[in-house]
View 1 (cartoon, rainbow, N blue to C red):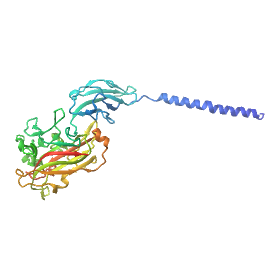
View 2 (view 1 turned 90 degrees about the horizontal axis):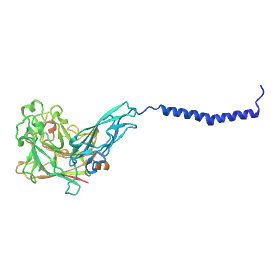
View 3 (view 1 turned 135 degrees about the vertical axis):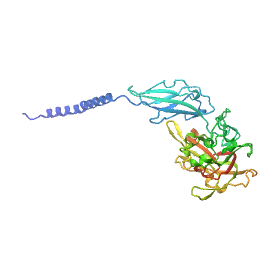
View 4 (view 1 turned 180 degrees about the vertical axis):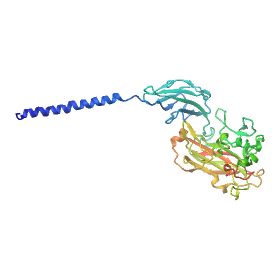
Length: 405
């Protein structure tokens, strides 16, 4: 074979360069195209966000943008209790390629907490997921309409007989439209298990006409009798708190029966002021040690965890210790502030004030959005939630003011 000429070598190198320039990129492009073509359609069928553009912003609580969370199939849209719900047109952001029926933006009737069902279908058409959407009115704590915008007052003038077979009283606040907002809870329903036929004034929590100004709330630690002793709940402290009482857990998990908190849309809380009377005594705790009984008064600002669209409220087991507490004002930590009367009926009212102590930084935007909750709690016995206290301990509270920045 004859030796390669310079021209042969030149031609061979040129072919190599052409191979690099044209053939390799062509193969790479074909492979990339094949990969793109083989990518399967999306199999996810999720609602990522929900918004309600036709809902007035002034009444929205958690309704502007809702992330239901991975795996959740329920979206609860909370709004101000003042707003009368009718036809609304929720809009949805879905996983890529998914479709929804009824279509995003369809007007549906959400009045009277009517639930509406939506079906999300994945891009490949093989997976479907049903979502339930409901719009619920809820009282939202805002500043007094006739004040400076930095305080909220509670006068305890509004109460009525419980809507049921018992005689105890329920306290409520009036909304801007004059509706009754039952944001105050108490353990009266639990006490009814032991003395169902008792008159209102024999329950632990009831109204008295002899307040600082008009009516006031009267809290008394009561004996629960033979039934209470049998279930190891010998006393029931009078209590009143922003939240609700769940009777289903009153016997099996009493600390979890109290659900503390209502949505809060005010400035950062600074202090809680109040007028009170108190008369107490001593009791023997579970170890047989004599203890002086004091009332418990405190307020807690917290950010609830949201699971399946529902806020997880604090309860009797964690209302002072939960990791999501932002700030707390607690008279129970300083009982020396409490003035005890020899005769509560003839004593005058004393003034009390508790400062909030910060535990975590407060996000101004979350505060403005209503992402935080607050509770204010009054109880006649400081360890009443553990069924310890002096039977007869009495606390009367009136003219409560929550002051903010």
